[in-house]
Each structure stands twice: as C-alpha cells, then as structure tokens.
Length: 211
Image 1 (cartoon, helix red, strand yellow):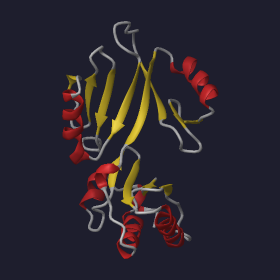
Image 2 (cartoon, rainbow, N blue to C red; image 1 turned 135 degrees about the horizontal axis):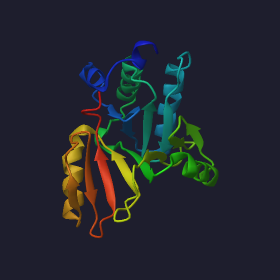
Image 3 (spheres, rainbow, N blue to C red; image 1 turned 90 degrees about the vertical axis):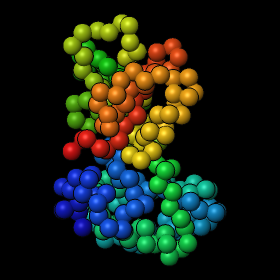
C-alpha cells in the first residue's frame, strides 16, 4: 500500500476517486471529521487503528472532543478511501475546509549558524539541512531559508499557512478585510505573500504549482 503512494503527485491524488474528504498540504494529506462527542471520536480512532494495523506506515491522528484530524505522510489513496469509508459507516461527516498546516520560516544568512539554537531551544528533531520538526507533532515546523544579503527593512521570521486549495482565496480575502494587504502574488497559486498593517508578513500556500 505504500510503494505507489510515495510517488504520485498532489494533482494525481486529488484526481483519484473516493478522496473528496482529503486535501494535500505540503508533505501531508489531511482530512478532518466532525464528531458529536469525544466517545464518538475515540470509536472512530479505534476503527482507524484496526484498518491500518498491517500498513507499512500509520496515519497521524489528532482526537478532540469536536472532531478527529487524520494526516497521512504519504499520498496513499487506498488508505484515505478506507478511512473515509469508515467515517461514513459511523455517520461521521468530513469537513475539508477545516484542515490546515502552519509552518514558520526563518530567514538566515548562514543557516547552520542559527538552526542549532532553535533545535536546542525547542527540543525539535532536525530533518535534512534546513528543517526542524516537533517529534510529538504539537507545534509547527521551522524551515530555514538562506538569504544572500541581510534585509533589515523586512521581518526575517514569517508564518506559512497551507490551506485547502479551494479555500485560499477566501482566506486571503478575510485577511485583507481584517486590515492586511497583498505584498505579492507572483508565485500564486503556490503561495501569496500578505502583510499586516505594520508590515509583518505571512504566506498563504496551496499544493498547486508545486509539482
């Protein structure tokens, strides 16, 4: 169940049948299922555990009293279908608009000079040369972006918010209506750069244009 899911593109995943509940967000594929009680959510998690017992990779599951968020670390169409089918069987509706992935990007002239500080401070794991991840999946990841020259006029830490692709324009419109402004849409639909009233920046991102 893992081999082909490692290689398909985001576009291919979204074109597959039976995955309407799911959205590609950077390296994850996520779905959110609304539950009426914590007990109902726990029963759903138990069913997911049964479904993936023999799988090569297991999903990440976040159980709350109002819903269950499931994230796959590979674009596994078969597993996504099985989990969605289990939700339908239990009468638990999906809410694709509820998923998102927040990351923090740190601009640095010499990444290896600053990354160890943040790794030690946060107790994160290092993935590759420029990324830190929370080993318990409690907080956002940190990506370190190398700069050629310092930019004193611009904030050097910004948020990256990955949203379902069909939600991007609404999220941007809401941010603009709340006092923000568009800095650049040169890379849309991969990402749009926005800023608040004082110039602090954030990016709204989708999977589109990343293949």
